[in-house]
Length: 171
Image (cartoon, rainbow, N blue to C red; front, top):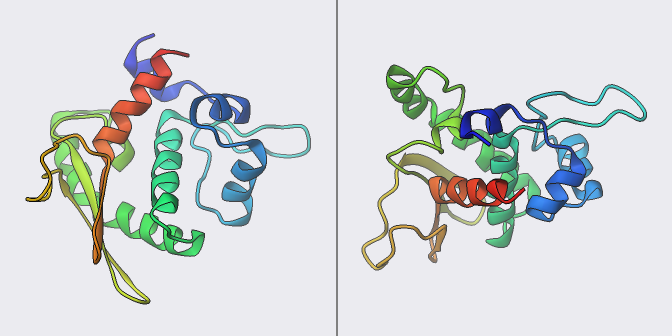
């Protein structure tokens, strides 16, 4: 399957469970209760209807999962995700100049150079920044997904996108 077609292929809850391990109840909770994710292809519109998620939605879910693994609650994740999408507008605009089909930061994550998310944290606030991925000086790996330190977290969004592409190629 071509990479371009994967971006527009609809994924349902059963697909997401098979690919990422999110069960349908947790997915419903993230979409309807916490509004952390909005189905990019089609939102369910009644009983018996199912949400249709995009490849970018799957990448968002991977990001949510990594932030949760770092010990962050859903309210903090929602705040970080909102800041991440806001802060990433410049990278998206730069990418649009060379690639026509870039709508958001999740599209941009599948391109080179790799991008990362840096979250500086204090007791009750987060500072979010997005930039090209450069591993921390103490790290000897360029492709680590998450680097967790005392005062900040760095997440390599492009590596997450690469892992997602691998998983989707096996489907």
